[in-house]
Image 1 (cartoon, helix red, strand yellow):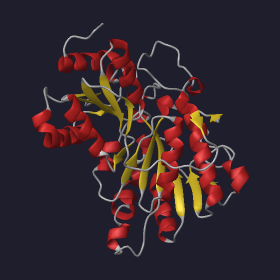
Image 2: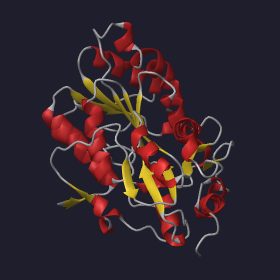
Image 3: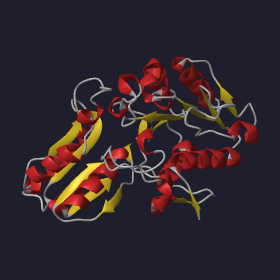
Length: 340
């Protein structure tokens, strides 16, 4: 089996879908000849042609608007927004058009759009290249939100997203494009090739949307995370020897609430981790759902470790980033004294 990093896995998924379905087209800033700012679309224009993978003007509103029109005519566009921080000019098209099209037309039209966008920090991108806006889209009825954490998941989830008849926001954690991140910024990054999750089939396969992945089983506490924070959380519980169950949500909408509920009822404790700002972050929704469904099983208050309610700071990035220290303190608060 081929070893891939996340960029290569995404490229492979796009290539598979373009080969299988002529209605799949890729569009965005620099995605054609240049192959994308992170090279996720490298070689696709040369292989599939300039009408299937093409560059657009710097206009996020225009990119999404054109994709909505394409989808209404039965195509499956995959627009790339170069950084999630720049997606806001396209919000009206996404919220008012793409998300509502099936409902407004009584299912006469659909909006099979998959919006790819790198998101999150950990790369010293500052306030304009580090944001995590996922909760804005989980609030919108009609949009699905997907966040992979491994190369294997990235390809399988991307293929499912492209084949879905509803619009999907596909956020890619750019901090882990080339390897998982433990949260220890002063340690060298290990490439994906050292990890089993980098073994990605070259051929077509799917991972269903709405199905979480239990990456580590445990009995003491349930840890809910997605994207980069899955790896940070796993590293912290391993380091401290905590018998935690770590769940990678994979998709925020649809959410695999059944897996979450079963885990929390087993452990009696819950820690939620995400990089986005705290207020109205998706962790608040998770906390409410766990409280509603598992109240009589909880043995401690639900804890959240998140980004702060500030712009993403450049010089204080690792103070903002939910790293091992803050996660360890939250675990200690929930389960008691750490073992180390």
